[in-house]
Image (cartoon, rainbow, N blue to C red):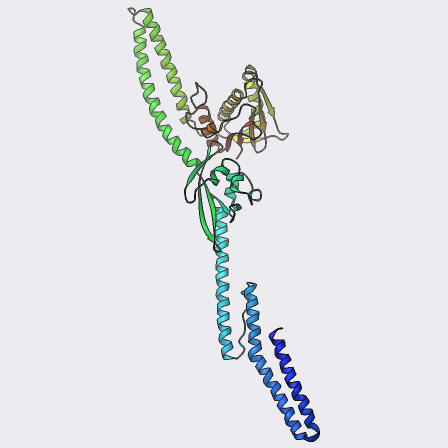
Length: 426
């Protein structure tokens, strides 16, 4: 039973007894009856004043406690004219105002932090107390290749490779570089923060692809230019001497043949160095709108003889709507020649290579043996090749041309067993 009800029951019962007693005085002592009535009215007035003095403050405290419970910091109380109670009301109002300002400050900080996270070029992924994905920003969605709705509630181990395995094994507060799709590099770090007294984790994903490739290109650019300069200078001088020796009438035929072999090897070495030099001398693309449908039809006719020679079916799948992309046609033809040639070799006899054009990009699929995991990480690495006589130049050239165009790309074996080279239009 609430306190006001108890108070009114007590006052009502007490004054009921007084009224009954005063009625008994009415017959014998009417003057005493009138005095008793005055006392009863005075007692009721005192009871009302006591209600105002004690019960109302209790109600105010109860109302204040309820507003705090509901986290409603907008309610403040007016003074009631009692010094002690007014002092309590002042303290309460100051506390409420401070709580309101602190909550507003925290809310503003929260929205600012949320905007900074969403605008950050680095991917940020928050985990819940069970280590599941709680939320992530747009950059993390782009890096992981899936929307936040699909990723929320999933464990790190359930993310697509290589992120699932790598992020699960990532130790706290230690940076680690993950290589994805053969040509993308991400710096990952797992850290912790306190949320309402509980420790939670978050992961930052920062793309390092451009920085790593720029450093890498700068390194091999200098090496290739230096080697090309020294080799070409030496070959020119050596060939000049060999030609002079070959022109001597007194020299034996066996020596002439040996000199011819040496000159031939020098020319091959010169072409070999020229291939490397071509990679670092790629000019900026001269972009013009190109019909990709017409380009792919041309490339299919151009590569058809090589496909037939290897016993491979070279198919083309085109969309109904035309696709026009700004590109340097000559450079992009070099890209297509390299990737189609690699796909034909990977597919093998009785294999199939499909050029599938979409509005968003181009997919080149083959049903070959697939890419081993140890090779996947080395794709697009300068001078790396799985072929016995390979120089590792083809994919280097492809990488540089596509990067100069600003086209994203990837090379991987899909879960269905097909190997896909994807180029996006961006």
